[in-house]
Amino acid sequence: MPDPRLHGLARDLPQLRLKTDLADLEHYGRDWTRRWTPAPLAIALPGTVAEVQAIVRWANANSVAIVPSGGRTGLSGGAVAAHGELVVSLERMNRVLGFDAVDRTLTVEAGIPLQLAQEAARGHGLQYPVDFAARGSASIGGSIATNAGGIRVVRYGNTREWIAGLKLVTGTGELLDLGRALVKDSSGYDLRHLAIAAEGTLGIVVEATLRLTDPPPPTNVMLLALPSFEALMRVFEAFRARLQLQAFEFFTDVALKHVLAHGGQAPFAETHPYYVVTEFASDEASEVEALAAFEQCMGEGLASDGVISASDAQAQQLWRLREGITESVARYVPYKNDVSVRIAAMPAFLAEAQALLAREYPQFEVVWFGHIGDGNLHINILKPDGMAQADFVADCERVTKVLAGALQRHGGSISAEHGIGLVKKPYLGCTRSDAEIAAMRAIKAVFDPAGVMNPGKLFD
Image (tube, rainbow, N blue to C red):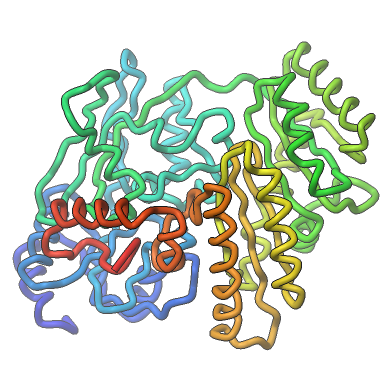
């Protein structure tokens, strides 16, 4: 063992898997940000809740910080281990533990990938509706840690709405059973919701009971080409007035260019500046309303072209144009902003943000896309080839500070669904008041008095 403190951990937990090879330290010590050099002490892969508790108690006794690790698909540095922390990966804790047909719940270990949980729900004729592009690798525990949203928030809401209960190993090693799948419970503070979106700073989620719902109806997908940024919200209003939308997403011509270069298929003969992909029920009445909304938008000059899926394969092809964006720009190691405002504030914020970024980033390629139906925008700035990473990040952070000020004026958030982590920590004060941050610090001190759980994330 490279560090003598690990001898005691291995002795006390002979079944625990520990990894210390340099390749493993690099793989498990970082997330998708790729901005910090990973330098964990070791990687612990527990197989049971009892092992997780024992690891946390060992960390307290030896003053070792812990970084909880799921699928490491995060984009805010929340799962980065760059200062000798012990990474605790739950990838071995990936089982379905139970299904309750009456309560319509699925209980899983926190390391299970989102896609496998979705498949398990479908096996019982139901669905777990939280969904996003990284479903194959993102874990349930990680999605709870950031209150992940994704592409169907406009219809189903965020992860928080679908967690009936969870088990949390606190920073002292104590196991809390929170929520217990009760529909109604007014017996004091709901500590379950404190754990959700806490980014592992209060403890490690080891188990979750997921609420399930009826499977979605058969759906159609429509792709719209828009002539201007200003048309986005008006098109959303036109479709929302006529349909119960399952999803409403937008992206730009720059985003489409990268997806097509990565293997996508062009949807129209001409290129348009903005696009919307929306999904709705495929019954006859909904299709009539969708076409009526499209004709209305065309007549008002809000849409330039459109196509509606004629098969499941075509629907998947249209979705690929939106879901393939993150993968297609990954090689640029983009600087990402994940922001949100109230839907009602979106038009004014969009106009200000577009002008701000055009003024401040004339030398960079900016890829816009997002969940316009729930007020969430993703802004990806691509690093030019040949520019030093440190210079690029410094320039981006300068502009993010200005963007955070605009968000504060519009009552928005610097992090819609990616979390605060390390990346957005300097801007937390633009979203939360001093009193709120002080309350969060006090809560952490109760759950994690020794400060071993993911220190340095959210706040110092």
